[in-house]
Length: 191
Image 1: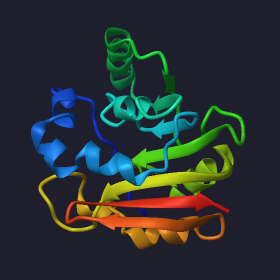
Image 2: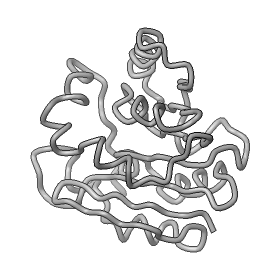
Image 3: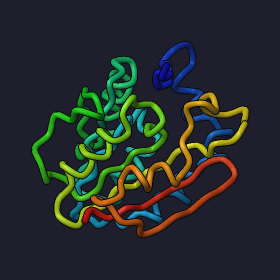
């Protein structure tokens, strides 16, 4: 029997957890974003954007960030923050990341941080990322290492970087790979 994917639950103090000092130390935005080839005229699709941990910093670097999430609580908080912070180039969209509500070849970059392990079909996720990317667009996948840790999802749902690479083989090529004990970051180019 195949185990279902594990999704982060937006309950209790989910926003505080996602933006805690501990998480910022474990996954520093200022280290992650420079590894992406973002330009001022670029558009980014932020999959599983949550409360905007990566969304708002990316918005300072590019023309547009489309923040996709399926969780209503996350989107509600994200909308409030967009309004409070007066960030006109972030658009929140409710959507399932394996069935994106967008036309083909509509964005320059897809950013998938800590969502690869959350979907039932990583193959479908990779197909959707490929579909929405413009020719030679890039996909950044960040996820937890497949090792026992106190942070993150259960080990049985975690996927190794090689799993991401094999799932994207044929439609993406690896351009950059970075790893820490906690997470990995892969930058893939659409072929």
